[in-house]
Image (cartoon, rainbow, N blue to C red; front, side, top):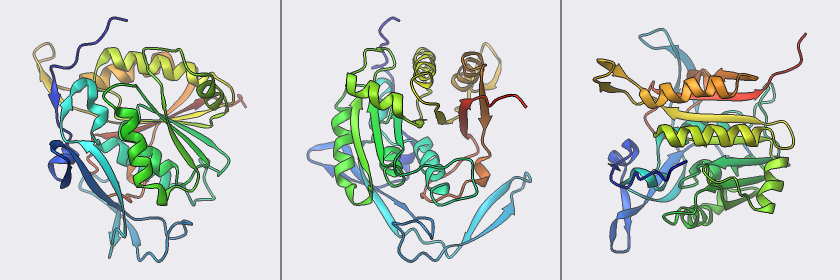
Length: 300
């Protein structure tokens, strides 16, 4: 694969437009933001929550989870950039990370579910960026490996955020290098990947070449060691194109088409996000989607 030059494209996450961050040092583009959240009432880290939930329907008839007297009692402090070039978008916080974090907390205390993370499970996040989702995974799993490329100080940023939020982590969370375009993994990482139960990825779909590399990497990792489940969260981003003469989501369409092709021997489910309780404070737009991938079970 040719080297990708994405450094000329500057982007800013919608998350940062509506959030306030405290500048770090003399660089106004690096800040520490506080992201508020609550916990399930019976979560081991939760003290006394007063959250009353009810299910309602929106104008389209879709189920939504509403809350009365909802108060986010807790917060994560995340160091990040407020804008970057496209090749370093992992230095920002994006909405898919919150959706994936919500999913992990939603299932953290549920017994009647086919999705359960235990304290002896290994979880690996791909393209972890700031490490926000990895930190939340560290609230429910015994060992979390937060991976990304070794570029733009992303790995040191993850380390910083892990340390800043260590009080929330009940297991072990560590940052390690994993590049979608380079399959030369360290011996330690290979061992962790082989024994991992869950692979996470949020907001990694924004350039077709990288999306292809991500899916190829994911397929390889899914075949390593024990059976795994993968969760992929992303936001459909619509643009008007002259080729289509319509408003389309080309990056999502490329991802979805190649996902179905690469993983045709796996079960792929787009989860109903309206059934996932929202614990973090962010705008959960309808364009946010979440996919679950796992090996097909035996035929009846």
